[in-house]
Length: 269
Image 1 (cartoon, rainbow, N blue to C red):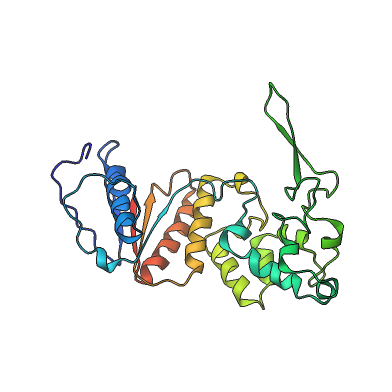
Image 2: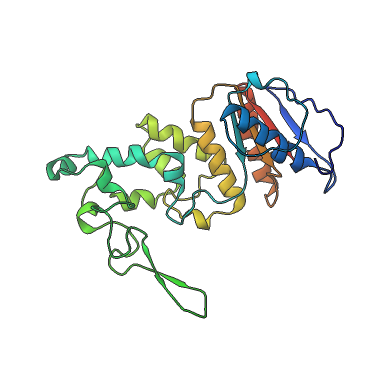
């Protein structure tokens, strides 16, 4: 396949392995085009076509394959760290269980900015309004009705520990970690974001404002917060590109945690 001719590769499971080489030597072809696509064909019955190979041994020891890149989390600006990691669902459930919410008959869906009911309909829960400039790039301004808070006044009236849902989304991960310290389901997800060095980002921060390195670490945090089987292989393509030395150190600590639970980490660098 491309520059890869007649090679045999042995990748030990349960370790941190690095694939390195000069530009154009076939690192990505080996890992992404051949190994990754071959694994998802075998494990998930995907129909994607993989690179050419004779055989792969040891697949029976792997039950999940995950590729972690620097592409944005989610497909729209509505995605944020809270929704991506799954922390927002239990947060909404907590608000729906408050005394005032139960009196008004509000369910967890009331506290979602993606569906009608609790969101601000002027901006459809986006918090911002797009102004088309035709021959110039579009301009985005805060919604005049909700002042960028995404929710309508009735929803914002519901408070949990003196905070409404918009104020919670405006918290940093570090602040929210203390705020929800007594709620294990939320704390576990926030703790992993904090552990990967993202204590400074806000829960409701738009995915489009996160850098490639930050998006990558949010994805890693999501994986760390799930219960591991110890038989997962993680593939990362040049994960340290654009990262500060201190961020690289935090990233390595996270990858070591994945390996310590029996998983395999394969990095192109």
